[in-house]
Amino acid sequence: MKAKIIGGGFAGCEACYQLLKRGVDVTLEEMKPIKKSPAHRLDTLCEVVCSNSFKSEDITTSSGLLKAEMRLLDSLILRVADETKVPAGNALAVDRYAFSSRITQLLEGYKNFHRVNVVETNTDTDGYDFVIVATGPLTDEALIPAFRNIFGSEFLYFFDAVAPIVTADSIDFDSAFIASRYGKGSADYVNCPMNKEEYLSFYENLVSAETVELKDFEKNVFEGCMPIEVMAKRGVDTMRFGPLKPVGLRDERKDEKPYAVLQLRKENAEGTRYNLVGFQTNLKYGEQQRVFGMIPALKHAEFVRYGVMHRNTYINAPKFLNECFQLKSDPKLFFAGQLTGVEGYMESAVSGLVAALQVYRIFNHLQPIDFGEETLTGALCKHVSADFGEYSPMNSSFGILAPLAEKIRDKSQRKIAYSDRAIAVMKNLTKQI
Image (tube, rainbow, N blue to C red):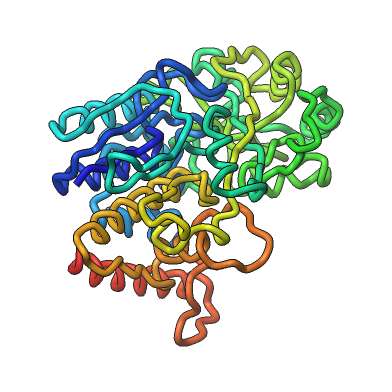
């Protein structure tokens, strides 16, 4: 069996691994280093371009549950994430450089793996049993005409925002403090407090700051990665119920309770760089330095990376794909990753994992795996294939799972029940794989 995968991101690399370990001859087409999107910098595969956090590991959260399901399916992404993780409390965060390098090294270690650096212009399946297109939310313009031949005018777009990164040495620790919320778990975040006067001044400057001008087709903002200035314009206290939530965070050196708190998370294992959590932005670079510098702990901040916004492309998947991520009009062609309208690192990876498993089973005349709607994996498959009306990107959440047989009033117990059921279903499914 010969398969081609177009795109070396999370979905593409996970799909490669699932096929490679099953003995499939895999060609990976990746345009780096010949050409890079505005968000990419590295030549290695599976580059982490936004936050370096893969969200919570807690099994009673949807992100934690999805990881648990993927581990049962032997996800390469999660195995390497565990190898390259940096402290982040209950979240799984990685050293982005070590993570990308290790993924590349492992894939290139397979004799049946062939990397071709090329700017692809078509999705032809000639010479291959199957092709998986996983070009991501920043699909290069060279491939867009081929997509239009398949999908017509059924393209959708949204914009994703990337948070700034500052150096650890430039953080003012006379103002900042290290603590976990309510003193629970390890204290892996640097907390940057503001009093009411400081917050209101910061807010007024943020909502009036200059942003990069967007064209009309660029103004559809995805709620899950909203620019901080857009969030601020929804109300003076909106940020204080979101990324600047002060609840449970205290600086033991001071009597005054913080009115708002920005948290910084490690970007690398050495702890020399920190990410401004929740501060995705479209502010002009100079404005980022000025406005974010109004936060006392960041008054002398040195920015390693400023926040940027870029167009994310996704297809109207339910009109064209089935639950296997297979194109209805061409059974040899599959799509995976954020291009299909799943949103998030793990969601992208699991879509590539599923597409590869189904490719392998279909080639070997086996029934595709039905992951059902009791698992988050299956619920995401349903999301990309069931037409419920207007289509938009989707993260994993308990809300997309099939309802429980019995109503459970207690929210925490309900989440446990969802997780227990999903894990039991997935363990049973893995016996078929």
